[in-house]
Length: 234
Ligand code: NDP
Image 1 (cartoon, rainbow, N blue to C red):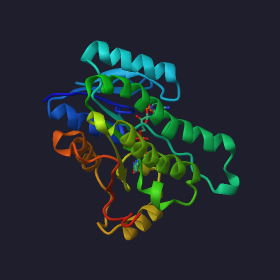
Image 2: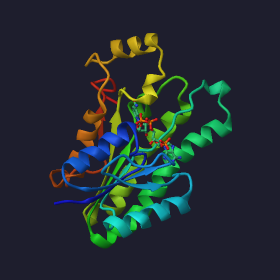
Image 3: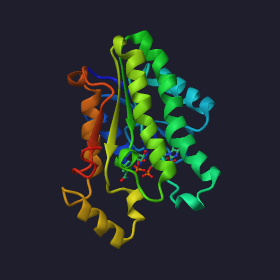
Image 4: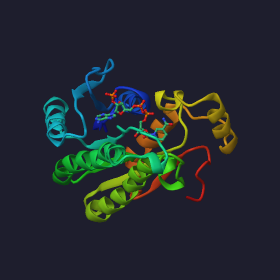
């Protein structure tokens, strides 16, 4: 059955691969962007997820064009790495406001219509770093770990209404976010990953479409790693 899907930050990177995977299976797919426009075949809405009015307006635009959002993927995210002693409160708060509060704004706005429809799928894109930790990533790891508590609380609140909330935790994926890493750092990462490589964005998208499918109706509050074994046991 075709669903209406909204992917935040679906204009590029992992979000775009997720949006394209849903479109490929015949769903009606909208993506948020911050001015770049939407790639061919996807319905674009301009939205900064740090602004709740913009989030509300984006959902309204999608509802008018494609119908109520049945699957929402909170994917938009940023990093602003530096060591704890050097990290300013502003740097900490900016990452939390985008990655964690942004996901909250999106999930909250989506849940009202999902409750009415008595069906919904909420998927948060976290990171292996959320539970594993990362030097220089106190802000990012805290924001990504917070998504786990958020998904599990939503599961306890809305689980009885056919609404699931899950977390996908990618490891190191080939995107612009990882393109900035030095070759030495990349080699170090590859050494630590049992799969001995970075992943493609499509491998993350496959986990997301599975969690949104009818086959995954009994999976909620789960953290699904797509990390080649890097975070095992966390
Ligand atoms: P990119 O940096 O390639 O893309 C980030 C996306 O988020 C862009 O679409 C960007 O929009 C959007 N975005 C950022 N801030 C905001 C905001 N305030 N409002 C709306 N949109 C915003 O990232 P990736 O594709 O690599 O990452 C996607 C997600 O996956 C992130 O949450 C990231 O933390 C997570 N992740 C990535 C990993 C990796 O190895 N790449 C590993 C683990 C997790 P715009 O184009 O307008 O800038």
